[in-house]
Length: 387
Image (cartoon, rainbow, N blue to C red):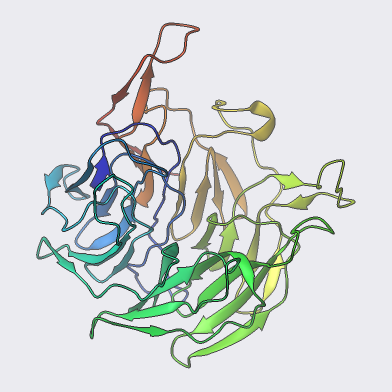
């Protein structure tokens, strides 16, 4: 866990799983999605294999924190780490290369605090942090991070305010450069996934009124860092989601089982799925397997499915809320209800061959009444798939 803040007022979750590259070798890469308050989790065995960070969106009411800890897979115990050089309650998704965790801490919203973001790295073996050369972002500090071989890409989340280049960071020289322009037209909800050989860009076409004249569907292109070349792939029939894509089972996977038809006013004529899979080798899109079971317990609106906040992915399994998709087996598995976990703002990640959740807050209230207080839960939980 790294940083966080002392306010329980944010409920979303950022997730960073361990990934497996396409060539079958081991990988220390990570991706992430979402945001929330509270601490972050860095899970390691002998190297930093996965991270999950937490954040708070909007004006912050409490002091952001710099402390942290490591959960050791060999012993199942926590140990403290060196304090970060800057607060970390609102970092974007970290990236891990070898034993180093790279973090972009967004500008602070605390009154009187520094307003610039901080690019920094944590060396797991040395237990030390280092400030790095900041990315030349201009006025748009909203970026995501993705690994690209032994470099890091700063991904622009949207081009709605103008087309700006994505940036590439070289750890060896501590320098930034511009990434070659992708072949997709100006886009929004831009997200990248590292496959171990290529970076796959998933994005929606930027049009005046997305979805008004039909569904806004996911498009894709792949970038090879070895050749510095892009290649366009066929468009999908998937509505997708901004940060719900993962690399698992040799596929780019979005395991959201919902579908949408545009509603009454702008009906699309048929439902379009939110989830699906892409084989980047062939460029072929495929639907999610059928037969997704009902969750063992409902934690949200039953008509929309479970809302547990579990989001993570391992080498062959993607977990979205209360369902786990075993990609190569084309098999679904329901996660059991855990009534003892926190109510919200816990971190989740893939580690120890399963989903690890940590921390969060529970609401304190009389039956049938609104919460009167929130209590932090210092619990760590592990769920492993049945296989």
